[in-house]
Image (cartoon, rainbow, N blue to C red):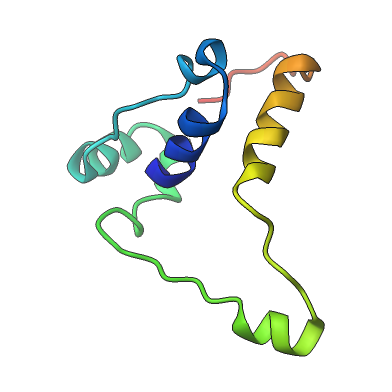
Length: 94
């Protein structure tokens, strides 16, 4: 997740970019926290892996095109301008 954070820091204004995290959580910390935090359990297979995603077949078969990195910054700006209201469910997430 450090790549999207870097894109946001590069493309957002100073005020919004200051809110983007700059540090990463070590793999061992993710694995340890996953034992007590259900939301992190789904991430335990991924730390330490390098994922390479290729869109060649989607482009060739479906005519699909990837979106530029500017789209991520545009979405972020929109969320800052129009915040999504929080829904309270009455129960704790953990």
